[in-house]
Amino acid sequence: MVDVVVYFCLVLAAVGMFLLLRKQKISIPVSYVGALAWAFNTSNLFLGRSWMIAILVSACIPFVLLGTSYLYENLSLKGVLLSALPKIFLFHSGHPQFFIWGIIFDFFYMLLFCIWGNKNDSRNKKFIIYYFLSLIPVALMALPLLGPMYHSMSMSGGRNGSMPFDY
Image 1 (tube, rainbow, N blue to C red):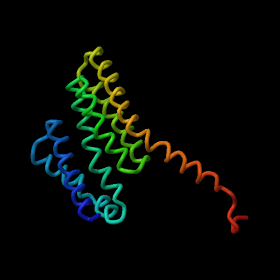
Image 2 (image 1 turned 30 degrees about the vertical axis):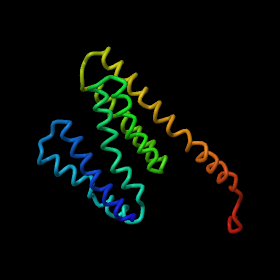
Image 3 (image 1 turned 90 degrees about the vertical axis):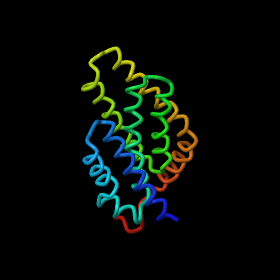
């Protein structure tokens, strides 16, 4: 069953990257090559056999960036929710460190829109506000998992005594 999920996520990663590249107005042949390179790179192929979380992140990241692109074009409540949805999936993929890296990368992607996109300062300010508003549903959906994660982390942090072989 895990293999089927991994294959599905690889295809989903390719589709997401193809849509993202097409959204950036990149030609169809180059978008196909980019999508295949994103989904079927050696890191994904080797890590995916034993560590499915990396494949889930590869599937989510293009959709996170697509959500930010959609939010840039549609500054509305619908844009906020559609931008938040892939981030929620990214968080629930199971690895908080990948989630934090993905959000940092998405933040820089958002800043690129402000730098190279529309030069209208009021629209860019509104976009930044809407971007941070899109993180509120992500935080609300992450709260049920943050408590147990923090508890597990604090429990493992309490076992920091020296091991018998330490000198």
